[in-house]
Amino acid sequence: MNILELAADDPRSSAVVAAIQGGDVGALQGMLDADPALATARIVDQQQVKRTLLHILADWPGHLPNGAQTAAALIGAGADVDARVTPPALDGVAETPLHWAASNDDVTLVDALLDAGADIEAPGAVFTGGPPMSDAVVFAQWNAARRLLARGAQTTLWQAAALGLLEPVQKFLTAEPPPPQRDITNAFWNACRGGHLQTAEYLLGRGADPNWIGHDHKTPLQVAEESGAEDLITWLRQHVAA
Image 1 (tube, helix red, strand yellow):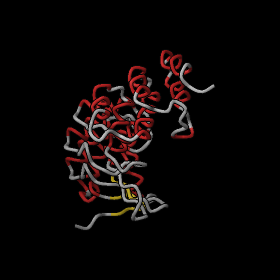
Image 2 (image 1 turned 45 degrees about the horizontal axis):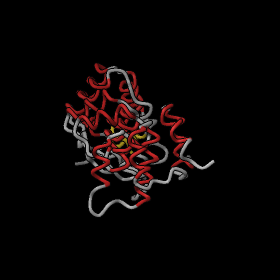
Image 3 (image 1 turned 90 degrees about the horizontal axis):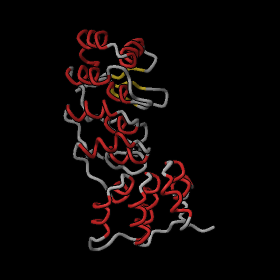
Image 4 (image 1 turned 120 degrees about the vertical axis):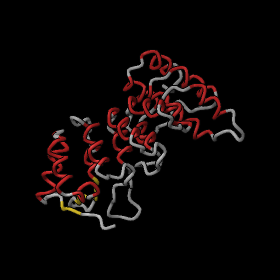
């Protein structure tokens, strides 16, 4: 099947993007009825990144008006809920609309996409290549992460730690073979970023390095301070190097 590709400055692109971003579902539906190929079209920007209309809907900063209704109109017209953004390089990131909705903490759109059958475990997340849960946690989008969890998403050790899921963390650490220390320390860092004292205490007791300079060149204490969890911050200051 030939996919319609439209330059970002094409008048049709401008019109359909304006309808999506403005939440004008009636205007969008009229365009889809008049030109069914729009439902699966790709908008091609100057960097040759090709976004579907669902990606336009889920793009940063998200939370567009009438997001769920817009998604329903697009999917009802034939949009692929699991389509991937097409980067210019073969090794580029190829995320689904659900990845982007998770990255923006857009819980309404997360639900709409999942209700329409989006693959909750689709790979392709930026930085990790993982599912949408990875994007939600990497970008500290806790509402989306918890909604994905409630909808059945799986978690890795570091993701479970970031969400303060102590029981799953304990299962990871008592498995055979146990995770290496670097993974335990990474999980500890993420627990601190999420503001979870009990999980951090457990991981420190299993050998995590409380002074590790981790992602974004930040220490566990620095990310705990960003979380605003005062009990965790006080505890950490007792366990880090002066």
